Length: 325
Image (cartoon, rainbow, N blue to C red; front, side):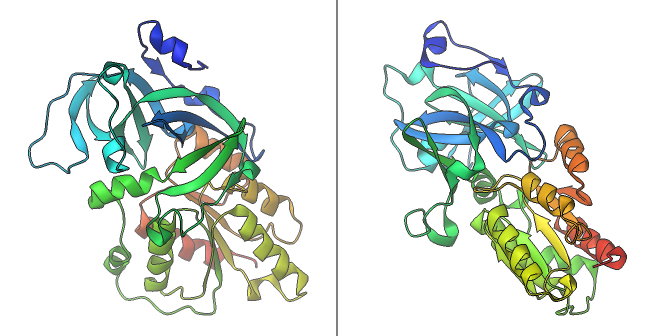
């Protein structure tokens, strides 16, 4: 793996491929690697699992009538990629004239989509425990419309983990999902007797996911912001002494979340003698071949890439029919 520093960029720039097989951490360790970058001197981060390549600034073709934060398109490895100006999206100033040519493009792959983000520097790859990533204050970071999924502390500085799924969905709503998509499945019965536990740190996606499950008839949804909160709900359910199915029948979890990620949550559930019968669905933008194998090793019952909400509901239906809880 390559580690980046300002010195690298001073030596003529770089083009670096991020090989996902090299950055996957041991299953269920509750750690992640983030790429730290800056925009207007502020520190931000993105999960390395979402990063395909980083490039020097490239020649762009402007796109007429595009969203204001879209700078244009460029070609990389025979693929046309849309570039998003992260400074403009975040209402931050652009880089100054002296450093503008040294700006960096981060090419990302998630939700089966490829986009590039224009940033000002790439500082390095940091391995951080999810326990050291706090969920953002909703008042400071925009309430339910916030764009931060976590605040990481690393060597005395704070790094804001951005909600890149939300950014893409705001720019191109067709890339996301809406609760109305569930209507394509036809009439559904209300199943208020089926409690479903959801762990999702993105405020926007959590709201859409809960509303979609409600529209599919699953009106008893318990929402948590991360794996740690979901695990506490499960511990509280066990402590009642009631049959587990009276409190939780199925778990839907994202993978990347502060405090405890979805892989760690899955590992804990499947190692618990009482909880292991709970069906667990990983619903994440990060599910590629390597991530799928990782989830399989941990015992996930199903894995599906956002935003396939209709397929998710179908999986919920099927797993509940087979569940022994």
